[in-house]
Image 1 (spheres, each protein chain N blue to C red):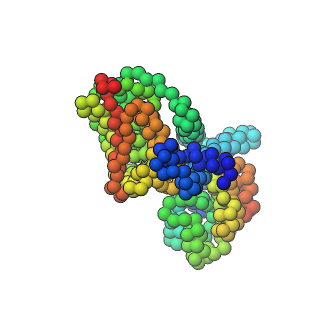
Image 2 (cartoon, rainbow over the protein chains, first blue to last red):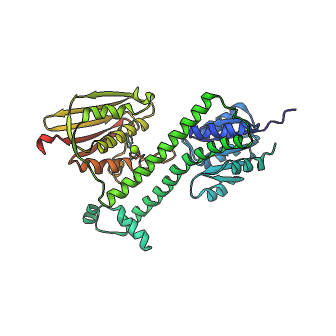
Image 3 (cartoon, each protein chain N blue to C red):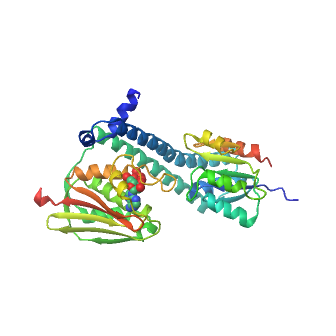
Length: 124
Length: 260
Ligand SMILES: Nc1ncnc2c1ncn2[C@@H]1O[C@H](COP(=O)(O)OP(=O)(O)OP(=O)(O)O)[C@@H](O)[C@H]1O
Ligand SMILES: [Mg+2]
C-alpha cells in the first residue's frame, strides 16, 4: 500500500521553490514543483496525478492566480484539492478568500508554521 | 485626504510638474496610487529573501537541536550558503537604494568628484556580473577615457542600466559601448528585450515607476530615478530610445572635463 502524499507547488522564484520542495521531501512527501500556473495545469492534465495539496504563490507569469484556480477546478478529479496560498502581499487574506482557498501562509513565515499548516491539511 | 497622504503625494511630484500642470487633484491621486503600489512591491521584495533566509537557518537549527548532523553533502551546504549570501546582498541593495532616495529628497546625495578612468571603471562594473551574464555582454569600449566625477556613483549608473538590459531581455545578448567624440563621452546599452512603450518611456525615470509588474521581473523601480539624479549632478543627460517588442537603447552623455 502506498500512502505517500503528493504536494504540488507553484512558485516562480527558483530558490524558494527548491527550498519548499526540500523541506517537504524531508518530511516524506512526494513533491512536484512548477514555476507558474500554466505549467502546473499542463502537468496535472498530462500526468493525471491528483495531488493531495497545492501550495501556490499569488503572482506568477502567464496567468493570474484566479485563472489558475478556475482552470484547476475544471479538471476531472481536481475539483476538491485543498489549496494553501503562500504570499507576502498585503491583501493575502482577502485574495485567499476570493480564491476559495483553504488557508494562507504569509511571508516571511517560519518553518514551524509552514509545516503545521501543511500537516494540518495532509497529515501523513 | 489626510495630511500625511497629501504630504506624500507632494513629495512624489517634481517641482516642474507643479509649475507646468498646476497642483490638481488628479495628479495628487495618481501620486498616491503609485506610492501604494510601491509599498506593496517593496514589501514583496523584502519578504521573499527574508523568508528564504529564515527557512534555511531554521532547517539548520532543527538538525542542530536534535543533535543530528545535517543530511547535506558539502556541495549542497555550499549552495545553501551561497544562496543566503546572495539574498543578503539583495536586501542590502534594497536598503541602499531606499537610502539614496531619501538622500536625493533631502538634497544630500553627496558626490566626491575626481578625475578617473571611466573605461577601466566600466570594465570593473561588467566583471562584477555573473559568468552567465558576462557571456551575454558584448563590450565596445574606447580605452583611457577620463571623466571628472564620482566614480562610485557613475559605477552605480552603469550597473543599473546594464542590469536592466540583462533582466528585461531574457537570455538575449546585449551591447555595451563607451565612446568619446570630441567633448562628449557616451555610454550606451542596447538590448533586444520587450522594449518600452512611448508612455512608459516618460514614466520610468521617475521614482517608484515600473513599466512591468513585480511578479514578472523583480525590482523596486528606483534604479533609473537614482541614475538620472546622479547623471544630472554630473551635468550629463540620460535618455532612452525604444521600440516595443524590438528592444531598447539607454544612453548617458557626459561632457568631458576639458569643456567644463
Ligand atoms: N532595458 C529595459 N527594457 C525594458 N524595460 C526596461 C528596461 N530598463 C528599464 N525598464 C523599465 O523601466 C522600469 C524602471 O527601471 P528601474 O531600473 O528604475 O527599476 P527596476 O529595474 O524595476 O528596479 P530597481 O532598479 O530598483 O531594482 C523597469 O521596471 C522596467 O519596466
Ligand atoms: Mg533597475
